[in-house]
Image (cartoon, rainbow, N blue to C red; front, side, top):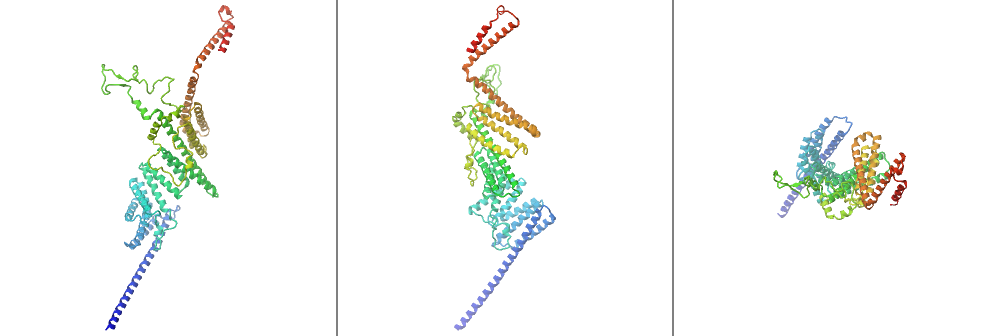
Length: 632
């Protein structure tokens, strides 16, 4: 009985084992079939995606030998077929689901580009919206992050073309926040491009040459975001993002070097308009440093066919950056001069308020006066004229000094005056907002530019020595710009350079302390303008007609300045020797007396009259008077 029972149990166990083996074998056969089907579909999708890329290349050819409409229809049918294949393969919770979703979204993106090429932008936008909605919950996944940024970039561009800057800004800010969150989680963001997604292999892997693609795409999005900020007149935000784009391009060594330098110099011009001189100087120095480094690279290379074009472009960018340096110097001079005048004369608004000061006081300004009412005059009002005794347009004594020197020159006591008014100067600086006190300065941390920046100041010009140093630095860059912008090839730019030189001389004359130095600088300014005017009349008459009014205005201003300096020379000469004025007057009277006696003697000689009868003075007396004059 025991043997029979054991045999029965052994028979049941063997039967169960055989059934399990058959079941597992069937499952393995089924799984092998599924994997084989998936791999087969991936290979087909890979070939079809390569065909789409071929169609796109054919569309971009200049010499088109095909029908665009037929080609677009073929692409449209192919994309629809591929989307259907992918949807049949998508199973939620499947490991391949995110990859298939990314492949489907890629086809939506390609379809939108096709519609845009056909002029159907609204349909393209609807497809892009659908694509973004389908991946909004998994946008930070490695299969979708790069694709999501591409779609956002494309959709934001379409919106900005239509003037919908607010929607475009929201999309790009969302992309920026997603990028920053991913960066916090991992310093290196893993991502897959479209070619990786449409690989025929079942296991996805990223391409080796796609490391910077995501960073370039993010840079492009930030650049577009800065553009939108500028369109919305958020200029500080624009400057911040434009600087960030330049920083990223510099660190990635991405883009054209000369164009990078030009954009950095232009951003410096914006900082100048905001009186942010340190940041302006830093960006100009960075542009200069990059151009000099690129110049050394070109010198080390063997001359290829396009070397001449590269050198010409480099020289032009050097000239453009040089003009920005000239603008920097002129603007720093202008702001410094305004600050000095304000510290001496007060704020312009306070001076304008004096224009509206009433010359007399009344009991009620809105009550008409009667014959019995007598106006109550101010203490500083002239009773005869009813006008202020001192104010704008007053006639002051010639020996008194005006409250503010209206000429382009500084009194000799200016340095001590500036040192003695530190509190007022600080107040003026705060009003003018010369430097940005809040936040961090926008600089390029990867560049060490301290030695370069020390060559030029970013502070107010307050002394003659500082003015001469800034003049020399700016003048050197002006000469560098003149090398490229010649009168023959670039006449208008050359004329502007001469006018900038005139402005430099004008500011330098303002800071010179003695009259002779001021006169010498103004003379150089006049010579430059007169030479330019003469040459233009002979060589470039058309250019002369275009700028003749500006040249005449500059020349008139210079002549007035020089005339004012000459008058000050006379005025100072009279003050230098006041003790000799009586002696000079005595000599003039003696000479007049001698002259009258000589004329009287001459008249008597012509009429043959006896000098004694005529009552004339003997010649010996005249000679004695002359001796007395000489000895006096």
